[in-house]
Length: 375
Ligand SMILES: [Mg+2]
Image 1 (cartoon, rainbow, N blue to C red):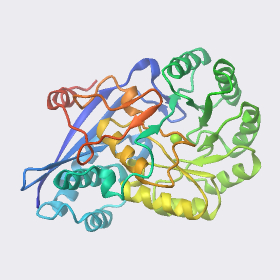
Image 2: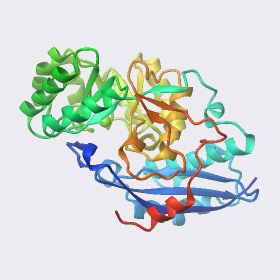
Image 3: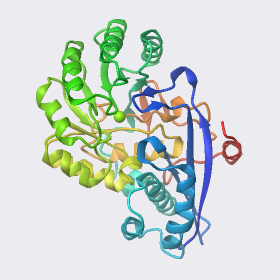
């Protein structure tokens, strides 16, 4: 089997404004992402999603399309889609960084392989070692407590038992009040986490996390700036709640640095951020060797990206979603979808698709509409 073409489609999907995520990084109102198809001489096509957000990784949808057309497609066309390691190595040599675009290509290559062999992607990754129903948590915005409480209560009523609260938007008192109100409204049976997206200074992080300790949080995600690993280590050694690294770990080298400085208790991974499923897997194994469990994070993926996360989650021993529920929730937040059938996420669990490859089939009519819209 040979690759004949790599095609990209820029789409715009809208977010449900009622549950829009507002964090220290801003408001996620629209998803301008890129769907990627790898075509072959056998008529089998692989699907990937570049869940690009300029404020997250610096990648733009327009840049993703240009990068694929000008730099990545010429390295892939004419070659065997099964030579995954070779292709991913080549992409890293041709262009540095751009993890979300590389992850989309890897996703499409794995989708192709699975379709050719008639097996789901998780079987290509060593098979399932976790249940196909993956516990997930709902994320509420760093906004008015009344809105946050209402959204959290609504989702708990549908079966969610874990809620992530965004914090770190410049007002630590408001952060504490928001968490207090949610804990009060939901009671002690619901698990809570907070995510500052790097929005606190080291001093604010230490002070605020100490004030949050009475609310029995499962963990605190990315308290300080992504580049300040030493600062995160200081926070970790000064507070009584577990710290999870998210933005601090894009690459395998980032993971090594967090481990070396013992800057986190838990490491968040997902294919887009890490540049592909195999790199997330490698980070999870490094973390395991250092005694740190992993968690699946998110950039609010649509169905193909969510499927890739689910295949990774069920096939990686050190991704412990029972203990730290995953963020495979993007499809819940979008009003639009790319598939005929909704992605299986509700009631507090995401289900890994069972068909060959990623197990996701696009609805071409819906995708054409999203490609023609600017929201
Ligand atoms: Mg995060």
